[in-house]
Length: 236
Length: 236
Image (cartoon, rainbow over all chains, first blue to last red; front, side, top):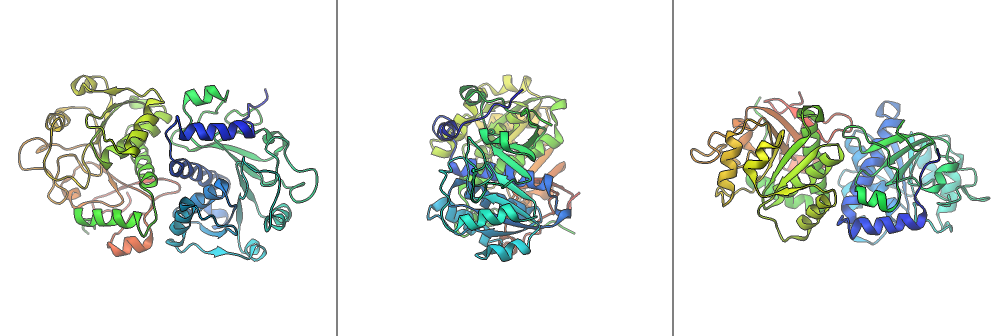
């Protein structure tokens, strides 16, 4: 059975619905999305495998999810470092940044150096609204993610991948394959091209919304905010 | 060793600090506080003991924490019912209410009837800013909480208790003793008078803030948002 997925267009519409009909604030949704990511990282890369986590954040919501995940990981005992070269002036992102600075979480501008000093990477650069054009300084970052031997967890999409068609045919990201993917709310069509551990997170979708977008959400266990799924999209 | 506690005055000051220096939004803090409460309830009253949870919400932030907890409990497979007689016109509380209505969570106005139809109660009526005067319709609700044989989890404070001095000397609440208490951020002085299972939740306090308020926070385990503590305030 093929996994039911959420197109880029529907993912954007669902996000809007969550905030209008759903009455969620972006603060709430991002907090729960980032929390999901942090729980997936804890599962695939427990602190015993190395506490140093490099969190690469893009300029939009995907980056915001990364900032939230980094804060929770700090509280779990990890040592996150943030690479966030295009910081948004949006109030929410600035607050998420301050929350990390208050924990003395370091921000770095030297990605190659940071790669040498960490045990795991969170790729929170581009998400479901990725347009297909990788602006500076991200081409080199995507290439570095593609080449590193460090384990990587991608948030919602491996950055540079087309949401429908997967890896770009050439250039940065063409051979990028993170070990872990956390699909937020629901898997996107690109999961067909993904080989690795796949989690679904974002435990806030109402039955009405799931029905409207024809989602077949996996069953979460207990109090988990994340669930690992197989190639059919069912809970492993 | 006596537990370090946070006075009512300092709890209010700390909350302000979290939102100013800490840069947290109330949405974020309430989401994490309510999540903590839901995790404590899952621990003391797993779904196998009965899924029907009555959530009694007061007019302020304590009630908001209850609304958030109820939503997470729904996602864990519980069947919450909300008693929320003094609904705030504040945008956040209205949104939290809508989020529950979108899950078809029922709101009741008949507390005595609801007591007969549930397995566990969350007391989210009054928190650390409780003034000492119990306005209508809450005197009867507090009396009912005091008399019921259902297990109760209180959020931040057993409602009606003075934050410093514990149970009132007479009247509603004088003999109220919930089985479980979830102290948010840090225990308040009233914990001296509490006999039952005690959890601390709200895993978002920075070391600076903990130091400023001379808090001795227990160590959380793994990804838990809640930690059970003994009479000295240390992790059980």
